[in-house]
Image 1 (cartoon, rainbow over the protein chains, first blue to last red):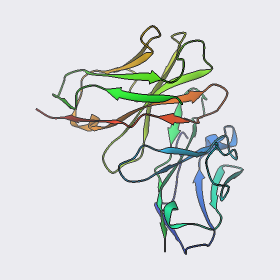
Image 2 (tube, helix red, strand yellow):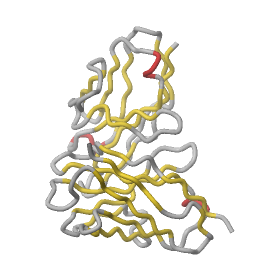
Image 3 (cartoon, each protein chain N blue to C red):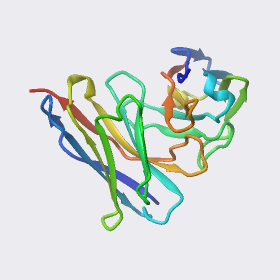
Image 4 (tube, helix red, strand yellow):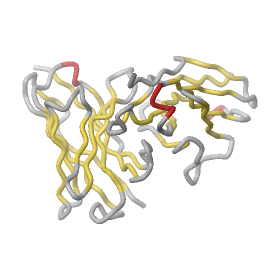
Length: 108
Length: 121
C-alpha cells in the first residue's frame, strides 16, 4: 500500500524518553523523514533519511527503522518538544511522496 | 540562508483555478541539486504532497491531484508556481512550498511560511 500509519497521540513525562512510530510497506524500500509542527507554524525537518539530523536539531532527537516501521525517539523530552510529529517517505513506486497522519506528542 | 515565500489569493471561488507562486531568496533555484515542492495541509489534518519540479522542468505529481495540477518554474524570476484547477471546498488548506534535496528520499529541508487558501463563493 502507499500509506503511512502513525498513532494519533502519545504522551511522555518531562525528561523521559518517548518513541513515535510510522508504519508502511514502502518503508521496507525507502527511508523516512520526520517533521515537527507547532501550532500556526510550518513543519520543521528533524530527521531525514531515517537517522540523520539537520544542523540545529538537538541530539535528543534520533531516528531508526526496522522492517516496515520507522521510529523517531526523543530522549529526555523537553516542554518545547510538545508538537505534532509527521513522518514522510516515498510510495511503493518511488515517484511520489507520502505523509503519515501525524502523532501529537504531549509532554507532561 | 535560503528562504521561500508563497504568494497568491487567499480566497478562490468554487470551480475556479488557484494560482500560487513561491519566491526563492538567499540561494539559487537553477543548476541546483534540489526539487521544489508544493504541499498543502487542510485545517486540522496532516500535510499532503501535491508535486515536485526540478529547475530543468522535470515534474512529479500526486496521483490523486495529477489531473488538476500544473507546477512550473521560472528560473529568471527565481520562482516556481502551482496551478490547481476546478477548486472545491475540499481544496481549502494552507499551501506550502518547500525545498527537497535530490538524493534524499523525501526530506523537505526548507519550507515557506505557508499561505491559507479558502474556497468559497
